[in-house]
Length: 190
Image (cartoon, rainbow, N blue to C red; front, top):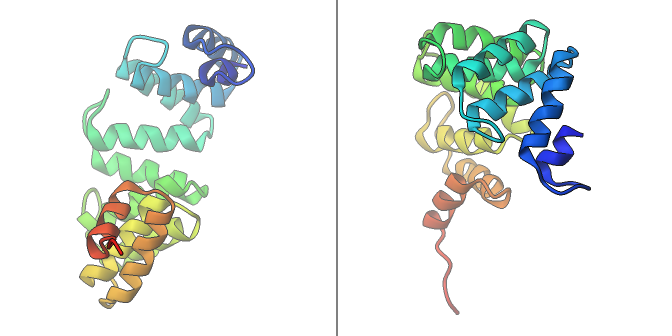
């Protein structure tokens, strides 16, 4: 019901009512409501922005096994939002969420291996992880995999494969992928 009020599905959109309902569900132990409430605090949706409160809620939901919260908590550690920056802790949390099948976490973990943030740099492991996320439909990963093929990082350089992946990202409305693809193949007026 909170989601319905937040998104305006079947009821008039009302962020404050959504927050009230999320709090009730969260206080009752609903981990999904807890991590969504954390998202609301982090992005100031229906409440005043409070990243420390978001982190507290993510931690509760993560400790209960909610993978979305684990991923979000990892992002907070990676970027130093609401907690002291700790990329090694971010990698640990991304690994947990990735092992649970969360593709956003798998992509972020791949990026950490690509850049050497929080782990030893390993382009092949980065490509392996990014490919898993891409194969699962994560457009950020599809675009990033195209970039790996374009630059020959972790894979043999293959511009045709890079363009194919950029096309998939572009067709899926991935904005960066779309921009690269349109620069590679500008539309011509006939």
